[in-house]
Amino acid sequence: MSYLAGKHIVLGLSGGIACYKAAELCRALVKEGASVQVVMTEAAEHFITAVTLQALSGRPVFTSQWDSRTSAGVDNNMAHINLSREADAIVVAPASADFMAKLLHGRADDLLSLMCLARPLDTVPLILAPAMNREMWSHPATQRNVTQLAADGAMVLDVGAGEQACGETGDGRMLEADQLLYDIGRCFAPKRLAGRRVLVTAGPTYEAIDPVRGLTNRSSGKMGFAIAQAAHEEGAEVCLVAGPVALPTPRGVRRTDVRSAQEMQAAVQSHADDASIFVAAAAVADWRPAHSAEEKIKKDGSGEVPALSFVENPDILAGVAASERARSGALYCVGFAAESHNLLEHAQAKRLRKGVPLLVGNIGPATFGQDDNALLLIDDSGSKEFGPASKLSLARQLIGEIAKRLPSLPA
Ligand code: C5P
Image (tube, rainbow, N blue to C red; front, side, top):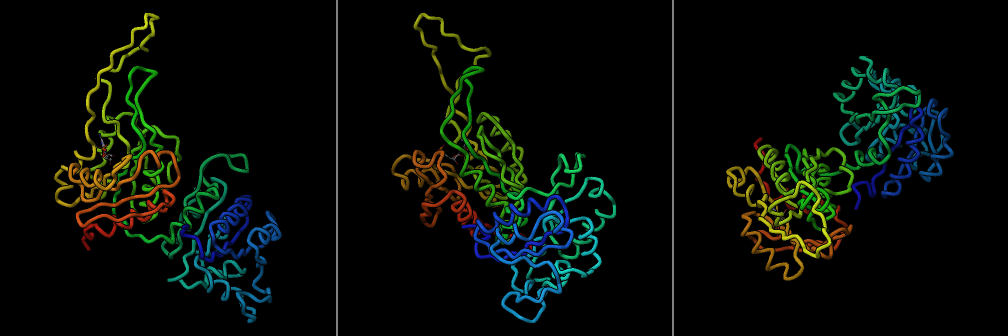
């Protein structure tokens, strides 16, 4: 279930080429189950028509403070009050340099700025998605305005970098619709992990036999990536150590790519001291070839097969769980067990063997590579089933369960 489902978003457009991205954002918000009321400034109407946004939002667009149509079911000719009172958030995308300068001064000479000023400060967040030329963005006046707007309670999103409509290259592009969608949705997530650092491992490892061959497994990394996203949504700073997978990095998450179990262990060790939660979702190879050949092992036609011998990989999770910080409760460790049968029995035994307070069991062959999963959570008080559901929905539930079990942060 999306954090945006059932939310009512006022989507404000000020003038800028990025108005075309606002159309895509409007559509994406509706698809997530939000209702959208579009409000446009006069400048925005030079870039895109209200017709498009009415069609995408399914509601008439408001453009003027003198518009006497019924707004939010009320006939008092006060659209700025009525529309801002029913909003769960006001999102201005694009927010032009001029529009932000206007907001900064509390000016309100058009419907959108009027609504931003009239919104109930404590209950209706204002989210600004800046969009402008790189020189305009880096100008001290704009940067000063951004800082002051944030201090006044607005959430000013970052900007993208790259080629701009004017032909220059640099910072100032409006974020893409999917990035905006994530940032807006995240506003509505509970922030039970605020102030926490979360370390997650995900995906398989790859153990080289020679430069072109290796041992790996069918883990896709989807569950671990979903956990990293869910932790970030809940306000955590997240570091994701990923084995070789073809997945995009969840927004806001710091990612370190590794290949072998030994590389994964080194990356985990370098981040574990800062973390307060460690979730080991990676499917680490149990063994690696005792020797990795420097050159490709050649088939010589004799029918002879190479003799491979293996050594055991370090158990990353068990090592972290045995550390002083984990044993003192400063680092909460969560393990995974991918089993093919007798899940409860194997997972209970694994929890004790790894020395972790919480272990999450799942059926490996049923879930590897899939978007759905089912989880069995085991701690010292028993076990609880979650799902079947999407990996993201399960990740959010798992993060909620972890949050419940954490010692509270010092005040
Ligand atoms: O022993 P097994 O591989 O079944 O244990 C699974 C759990 O231990 C997972 O949380 C996995 O990420 C972690 N693990 C690890 N290092 C290993 C093997 C497993 O961190 N070498």
